[in-house]
Structures are given as structure tokens and as C-alpha cells.
Length: 261
Length: 227
Image 1 (cartoon, rainbow over the protein chains, first blue to last red):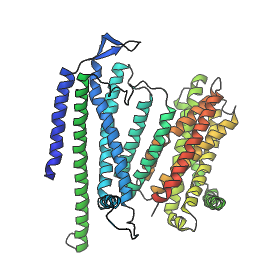
Image 2 (cartoon, each protein chain N blue to C red; image 1 turned 180 degrees about the vertical axis):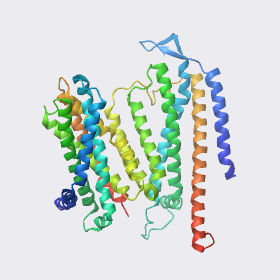
Image 3 (cartoon, rainbow over the protein chains, first blue to last red; image 1 turned 30 degrees about the vertical axis):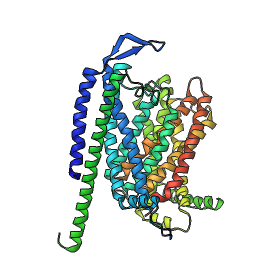
Image 4 (tube, rainbow over the protein chains, first blue to last red; image 1 turned 60 degrees about the horizontal axis):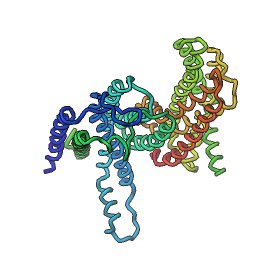
């Protein structure tokens, strides 16, 4: 059963992306331009808006991956704290949760680093597709607009985190945790320091919430299939890291017992 | 509080006294900074208008590069003699050790900036010192920011093999707001029509940035450098 989870999510993602491509190009209407007064302008149709379905979905999933990495980092740090030795009766809900967190210590760390890896890939896709769209829609490859700047810097912090993970050796987890915390503080300053916004708005009145009927379905499907893809990627990475660790531990045990040379 | 600062001052004075005896970091950093200035002078156009625009960037790039070198060397010294453990075992709070290291680094970065800035002004013929007070303020704040954040990561990376590459890789993305604030403030000071309001805005910005990074560093330093 457990073995089937990753293939199942991969298949879901593949089918979902295939169907959403069909929906995007054959079903969803073309984006209309808006006049100065905010009314629809029928004479300008934007084919380049089709990239939105993947660009925005990847950007959203990058945020999901970053939040996931942050949450599992916090859980990892919590799991390293010693068990409280006061005489309180076990069995309260909080203690059960903490026990669960503690017994899965290394898994949280694995999820965090796997999520960051996926976030790097999705961020790269979001930045590149965004740049292509910007060239078509704003006629520049890149302008230093807040969401671009902050995404680029967040992405660079993520890449730094990935490099630390790979090359910092035994103290990698601590350095990475420090990076995550400082990166969070720093992104606030980046946000206050950059100029005005030419991105469409986000939030409850934003583009995603107010999509036209034909577009909403296509977007939701593409976002959901990329979510499945994200889950499949993270799970397989967590599995391979766990297998790596188990192999290493086995090897060390074998060396200790003198079975291996 | 005063005891903490006194202990931090002792740690910083220890570092600076070693430095005053060998002058290794100071000489190499300063010469490296001077070399950077010369390279910039060759690499960028030297007409007055272009220089006004690019000179702040040159100053802050030089500060960033020399700062990383100083950080790396300052902590390498503790590693080579394996004195970091002794320092952490000393009967003072770890916070004092951290603040002391950061103070010593800030002094080094400042002294190199004190060499680079006049050199830039001379070589590129820019009136950099028309408003000395804001310029000194922004450089001091920048040095503090680099030293504080840098000390956290330099201390954590002490035992890591590729620390020389990893330190800037970690540090620069986090310090981008600092470099932007420094560059914009300096640009406001050397512009044809100096923009003092902008300069003060960025000085305040950097002050708040430094304060919050200092708070975060104080908060996490202890849990990051556990041996």
C-alpha cells in the first residue's frame, strides 16, 4: 500500500497536467484587456496569458514548499528538545502530539530539505516563466518590481540553503536553520525597500480569486496537479534520504561488529 | 548589562591586540581593498557623471568583499589554534563572546573602509566627503551589520571544510538590504544635487535593520554554536 503512494501521486500529476493543458489551450477563453475605466476591452486579447496557469501555480507551490520547510524545521528543532521530566500525567493531547513529533525527529529534517529542493526547482520555473511572460506583457525580461525582487532573493536564500545542506557537513542543519531565520527577517526589509508593484493583485480580490469561469477550472486543475507532483517529489526524496541514512547506519554497525571492512 | 559589555569588550580587545601585534588581517584586507579600488577605476568609465553613479556601488562592493575576508580570517585564527572551545568555555556568557567577536570584526571592517573611501575619492575625483557625518554614520552602521550577521555564520561554519565559499554564499543574500541601503545613502550624498532626505531615510532603515539582525543574532547565536 505504502509503495503505491508515490506512483499514485505521480500518475495523478501527469494526468492532471495533461488534462489541464487541454483545458488551458482549448477550453479556457482568451484574456481580455481592460480599458482605463476597468471595463473589458474586446479588441485586445492576450494569448500570452496562457502561461499564467503554470507560472502562478508554480509560484504558489513554491510558497507552499517554503512554508512546509519552515514548519518542518520548527518541528525538527522541537523534536531535539529533551523530554520534560516533570510528573505530569501522560495522555494529554499536547503530549501525544509532542511524542509523535519526537519519535519522527529525522523525518522532519528530511521533509524540510526535500521541500527546499523542490522549492528551488519550482522557484526557477516560476522565475523563468514569469520572465518570459514579462517580456510578452510588459516588454522587459526583468524589472525590479517588489514581487520579482523578493522572489529572486528568496530563491537565492533557498539556493544558499541547498548549498549549505550539501557541502556544510555535520553542522549543516544548524547553519541551515540560522539561514532560514535570518532569511525570514531579511525578506521583510527587502519588501519595504523595493518600489511599486506592476504584478496583478493577490488575495481575496486578486486575479486568482476573481478568475472567469472557464479559466478558474483550468487553473485549479493545473495547481492541484502540480501539488500532486510536489507531494510525489518530496515523498520520494524523503524516502531516498532515509534509505541513505539507514544504509550508512547499517554500514557503521557492520564496521563496528567487524563484519565489514 | 555593563558587566556583559565589559566582558564583550575584553573579548574584542583580545582579538584586536592579536591583530595589532601581527597586523596580518589589517594589512591584507586593506591592500585587497586598495586593489579593488584600482580595478574598479580601470573597469568602469571615468567620466564625472558615470563615476557619480557608480562610485557608491564600488565603495560598498569593496566593503562587502573585504568584510568577508576579515570575517573568515578572524575566525580562522580561533580554529587554527583551537581556541574557540576555550573561548566558549570561558566563565562569561556566550553572548559576551559573540558580541566581542562582532565588535572586533566591525572595527576591522571600519578601518578598511577608512582606507578605501578616501582612495576612491582621490582616484575617481568624487567629492565624497561633502557631508562627513551621514557618510560616517552609514559606514559604521554597515560595518556593524556585516560584523553581527557575519559573526553568527562564521562561528557556525568554523568546522566546515568549504567555509570560505559558503560564508559569502550565505551572507550576501541576507545582507542585500544592507548593501542597497548603503549604496542608496551614499548615492544621495554624492549626487550632483545632494539628497539629504534620502540619505537620512536609508540611515534610519539601516539602523532598524541592524537592530533587528542584532536581536535575532543574540537570540540564536547560543543554539547555533553549541559544540
